[in-house]
Each structure stands twice: as structure tokens, then as C-alpha cells.
Image (cartoon, rainbow over all chains, first blue to last red; front, side, top):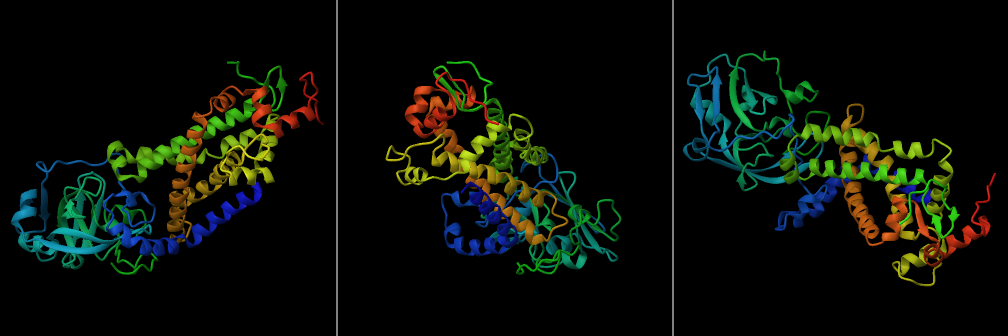
Length: 233
Length: 225
């Protein structure tokens, strides 16, 4: 009995490794009606119920207060700017979208409400100089950087987000302000956004980005990169 | 209260019986420490509110990974020396399933027609489940941490398995701790090794008769080849 039970558990584990990705997707689908309307928040503790996992690349969870926060836009632009939270929340035109967040490690959170300023609006205001090719993003955690081509950065679904899930972006989700690159895997959506730098070459030692240097694809389209076939977000 | 004993398991000595030999107690408590450390660090990585509270994610992750790699060590050590006799005897007991165990389960542990051996069905299921979790959590954890050589879908699958087994472990371990705290005699047995002979006779009659068969009335253990 004992040996059989033990082997059964090992079998369950092996089956789970091989088909867990599918089972998880199916389970999320089934649980959606309950997790979406869950007022208790208890479902967020269940594995595979469409929950975020929090990753950081540095030793501590970065922190910056709303009052201290400034977003710098500089590099190959006509007018470098420094924006505070009031600028981002009230002065600039606001864009809302509800879209999925897909992590390259396999989890996905469906229908996340996002709100913020479109990156192309910011870049147009600052005035991108001719010859610029890429946009580099810096996190105030001191380690996380990302890049997009200028063409990717000018898409309407790339957001400088100050709200997600119906409230200001929390610290663990990259608050007070983070990037949300809707059509790409989550590692492109840099957290704790500090600086947006328009550049004409990828020549910084950090390029093309923290996760890319660890081996993930530079063009991180959901379902068309990293050898994955997820549904587009 | 009696002092901790170093006699092999199942030795009757005066009015006490050795329930757990020293090697078994070491195995239990080193496993317990590792599992509790892993649960604590794992929950810190998993529950956003705790992640925020603790911060230092890289450090927590390293502690989790390295204590996870240590997980099979106590069990391997328990089998590495002459003390393995005691361990093996109880492992054999834990993995044998009898009619009494089924009766115990169907009556949910209430006193019934079953004649209890050294372990009840709940203890057997607990031991088998926790033992099975060691290779499962180790394998899935390794795939999650060193995912490069594996297909990416395995990483998702491994995460899925790791999460659900962890949730089950959390429930089982806290259930186990709750049951243990309610039984001072069992707590003493795992801390110092012995139970009163009367307890063995009343609560574990089948174990008691096993002891009577292998040991003379003088309490000296008959050595088996």
C-alpha cells in the first residue's frame, strides 16, 4: 500500500509536469467566473486561479513615495522632461485598456484593467529627434532595464501605467508607475519605471535588457517568441 | 517525565516502551525543520502581502532553494548507518495497510472495532504523503529553478505541481501539528522517545502484542539476526 501510494504520487507529479500547463489553462477558464467576482480575495491564494506572481530582480522590493516620484524622459529628444505623479495622472491625456498579462513562465492574468499615459503621447510631446532608433527604460531598482524599438514604442497599446486592477499600481506590481507593453510577455513591462531614454544605438552594457541578457527573446511578442504559442494578449 | 533514550525502537524497559529511537527522532525533527523553513520562505515568495512585508526576495529565494536541496538528506542519513534498523522497521509498518486501518478511516479515528497497531491510518497517510512530497517537490523545484534544459511547458507544469502540492502540504502539516499538540504522550514520544507501557497496551494493542512476541517478560530485547 505504502509503495503504491508513493509511486502514485510520483506519477501524479510527473503527469503534472508534462500536462500541468494545459491543466492550469483549463482550470483558470473554469474558475474565472468565481475569481473575477471574488470579493473575499481568497481565490488569489489558489494556485492557477489567474493570479500575479511577484518577481524582483534585486534583493529588496524597491520603494519610492508618490511625493518623491519623478519620471524622466530624455536622450535624443528636443525637450527632456521630468514628470511628477500629478502630471501623469491629471495633466496628460489618459488612456484605459483592459488586457491580459501573460508571463513568459506560463501564468496569465486575464482582463487586467490598466490606466495611464500612452507612451507615443509622451514621446511626441518630448519630440523624438531624427536618427533615434530605440527607447531604453530604466527602473529605480537600479538593475532592471528594458528596450523597445522606436516603432514598438510608438504603438498605441504601450502604456505608462499609474493604475492597474482598479487602483494605483502597488509597490510589488512596480508602483507608483510602471510600463505595460500589452502585446509582449510580461518581462517587457518594466516595473518601478524611473527613466525613459530615447537612443540611437543599443550600446549600453545593460542592453538589450535585463531578461534578454538572461536569454529571453528581444522581440517578446506573446505567442510568437520564446518558443511559445500562447494566445495573443 | 523521563530522560531521552538511545535504545532501539520497540524496546520495553520497565514501565516505558521505546516508540521512536534516536535516529527516528532526528529524522523527524530535521525533516520538520526543513519543511517549516520551506513553507515559511515559500509562502513569502508566493503571497504578495508577505513578499512586500519581508522584501529581500533574492535572499528568501536562495534560502528556499538551498534548504529544498537539503530535503532528501535526513532520509538518506537515516538509512546510512546501523541505526537504520529502527527506521526500516517503522517504515515497513507505515507502508503496510490493514483492515484495521480501513476501519479506523471509516470511523474517522473514533474508537471502534479496530485494533490499532503502532501507527493509525492517519499517521500512515501523513507519513506517506510527506515522504512522497520530498521527491516531487525536489524535482519540480529543480525544474523551476534550473529551467534551461527543459521545455518551457515543463516549467509551467512544474510550477503548477509545486504550488498545489505545497498547498496540500500546508494543510497536512498544520493538521499534523494540531493533532500532535493535542496529544502530550505523542509529543513526548517524539521528543524523548518513550511512551508508558500502559499507553501502548491500551491505545496500540496490536503493537503491544508484537512487543510481547519479540521480547521476553524481563524486558530484554531478543536480538534477531
